[in-house]
Image 1 (spheres, helix red, strand yellow):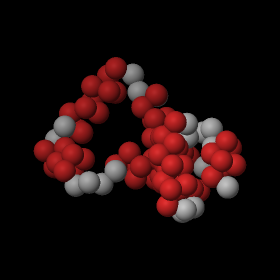
Image 2 (cartoon, rainbow, N blue to C red; image 1 turned 180 degrees about the vertical axis):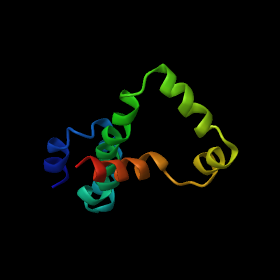
Image 3 (cartoon, rainbow, N blue to C red; image 1 turned 60 degrees about the vertical axis):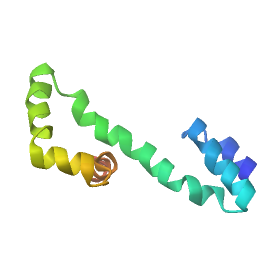
Image 4 (cartoon, helix red, strand yellow; image 1 turned 30 degrees about the vertical axis):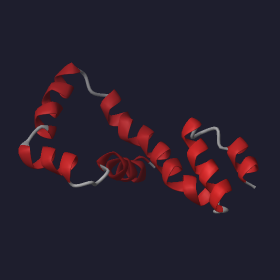
Length: 95
């Protein structure tokens, strides 16, 4: 079962090796172990699209916003994965 799913799972790439090994050793379900990784990989393009449209001036305006103390603290110290959170939200709006 693990080998079949692992062969089909080219979208995620090499990080699937660790969950595959864990699934084989522990006898757990490989698909459920890689689901969070798959969701992360699917969210990244949605997160990147708005940045691709920014020019240098737009990036220059964005950096000070992200560097503000409240936002910077939330991104670095809360443990919330903002890339996935924002990616999920953007994915909903882009559909």
